[in-house]
Image (cartoon, rainbow, N blue to C red; front, side):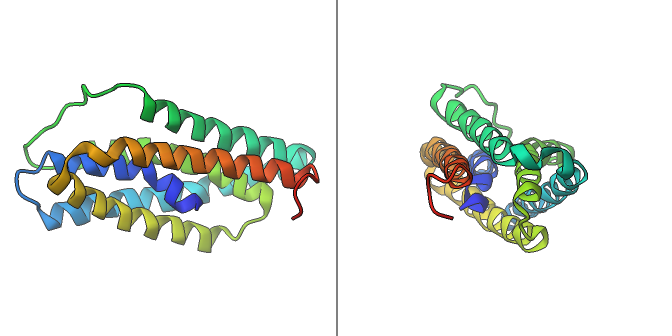
Length: 183
């Protein structure tokens, strides 16, 4: 569920990239998916090791940190899905690697925070990051195809669903650690 939620931003941007293609270019769709998948897979690893280095200082408050981080990230995604930001530009020219690199970083910042949360929760970072990377790759590829074929109809819903999932996971972690929900 976290992998799907984290993929929502990349999916939304992929839909926009698909909209910008006059004709679906599978090589560009694979390149977009590879960039987003790689960054979404790398960022949790970076966050995990940052979190591990501070683990002894935050163990007592780890569930609150996870709750706040996931709630903030999810809330931000929900806000961005609800606000009207249709002025994003669409370039029909050739895909620019520099732009794709920046977009991949921007859409994976939340994965860095989730990596910190994974360190607190002692999650296996390698399998989790692999699942996140693969999920993002697949959903980004699908996003380009959907964007090219169906337009921006699903972008907002994907981002909204991803945000809600992250908020709910944060609430679940908090309630489990407070003893309200059984582990």
